[in-house]
View 1 (tube, rainbow, N blue to C red):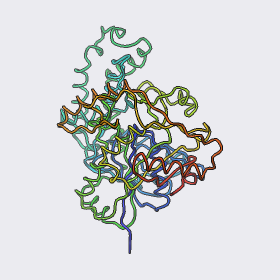
View 2: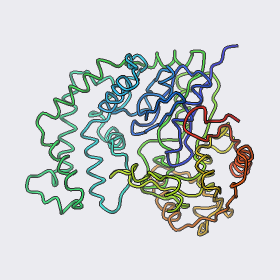
View 3: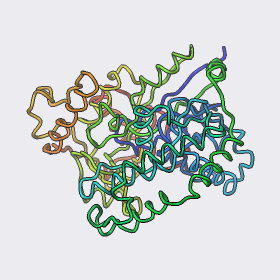
View 4: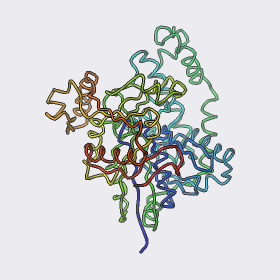
Length: 466
């Protein structure tokens, strides 16, 4: 009997939880014919293969090196400049000369423009010492504008349209009006920005005043349109009817979700996997779903926001090159003990333990180097019953969107006051097989979800199926 199955990969943290390597391993083992992309192109899904290939994927799926095709769904936001750069890199560095033959894009896929990118970066610079934490691509800016100014939205189907230039001009004019104070010729930028950010702000301002900028944007968008294959719902339905295995690859982690994440340090995207599954159901998928959560063996967060278990020494030891990963938009990378309180909350907002078929735990080799595995399964300071259950678990609040956002802001303030209760396991003399057994038993106890994959390195050969 032929198989028809989709593996849904779900980051149950703040992102950076090795979705790329996990998705790649599934694709290799199951010989996935297609990777379905959802979320945003600001993701950076790293893949390191056993034959020496290394790449961070943004638009293309993590099975590209193995010949899997990529379908960019209507629930994905793309950035045409980055898409072209990514395709050129895969062609020039990795010799995939027919790279666009591997890609199809839904016609209603939303597109970021450079004016959205610049605007998102302006906003973060203007926040000075109170960062939100962004990737700096402009996906959130684009999503907000799609809602508030739907006639200006640019979709994949518009990239070669005669209306493209007019839409770009409308976006530029409105953004110019929004930032007219800092774009005016007599503006003293020191009134708005840190001195260290003046150079960046000036470069962005110059682009807004560049009379040829829109022409260059149109040229790139047209070039992308001429090379990509635009599809519709009929194509997607036929794809879902195809025998074989697919992998659904999402950006971000569920703790970044626009509504259920810890406000205000969240994305504008909806990250919950239920929403992606609703899309599959909408277009008639009738096969099996395997839902796999991903996490590191320690907690990690790139950028501003709560991380209750943050530990400076662990960050230094676990992410020794963390300073190289910093940028003005996302900020610092922080690490700490694996936080089962936040993981439990992530599991709950996805529908509970019964939603998941298993979890994938990565970077166990880094924990081995520390010779101890620190976890947190409770907090100090979580006594407010509006936000926590008596047992310390974080409550999942249900309400309309705005009330939920306000609740999550208050929850973040509560979390910022919490401190972790830590438990440490000595693994200095523990054989790897025993460490795997310990990891499995702890996850089963704390989350009621079995460990199905564990990794002790970067490549697919370092990932163990359990």
